[in-house]
Length: 223
Length: 158
Image (tube, rainbow over all chains, first blue to last red; front, side):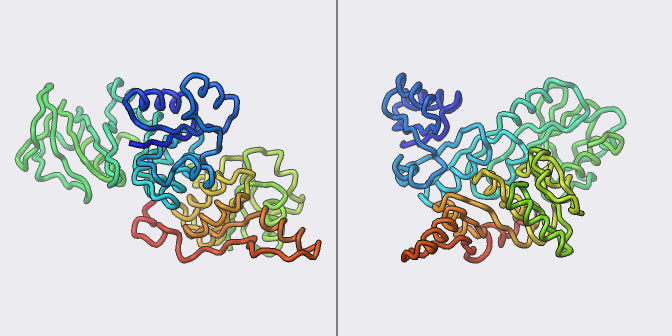
């Protein structure tokens, strides 16, 4: 694989090292000269001191034959432009962007970035899982289709308690596919009755979240 | 008519003033409140400190559904991102992004964004002043068709 990494911060630096170790061909672009020199001293000539947002430098770096372009600078707008240039100018089959503002994930996906990595979202998700709140938890985002996997805790006062799954009005574009009862994973069938303490796993479009919340958690909890 | 302007530099402030005088409803954003000193005291529009590449900020500022969305900060990539937010997420009717790199200016016009390239504008003007024959370098690249994704079905949801 030929991977073009843009951005020589901590992420780009370790990524490049790991990729070289696994035997891949890598070029790392870093626009800050001092930083580029510093990395080049350590890992050698694969480091290019150029701005990866510029078409002509992307070409010099070999973007037209890259299998993957990974845009991992600290600036969302730069990562977007790098991926769009790679995609539309060089037909790169796979583009990966680091996104700092989680709100940008959707725009990036919509504009054709193949894979979006949001450290902010990941850390947020991890924190949410550690706190016992009667909120919906975001377990994972599913790449292409703008879907997410959500876990809802059925607690005292939930309108879902005692109801059969088939009687719940699920919002269009969402589906319950499992639940965890006392630590045991189960399938949700039409006649499964929800009980207090269940953790219901649903998959759906982010727009369904408010409806899911109403069905499974109740009105009293603010979004 | 409603105009949203991201970046209150000389061009942003000048256009904000002109549109305001022409009776438009103008919203202008900049990351530095000192930038608003460029606006004349007669300006009746809204000047708001905030990051124009942040969707939440733009929505809170009421930037949705503008007839005109101008991305005029000093950063090419910030303008590219703001303009695409304007089109895809905020439903702007007409969008112009200032992109000083001629390569990117042309590339994004192919993706359907009207782009304004100061490099080309000034090169052309100076060569014209010198009376030299000049290559065709448009100052504004007019988009070819719709924004790549704006014509799709998901645009309205974004």
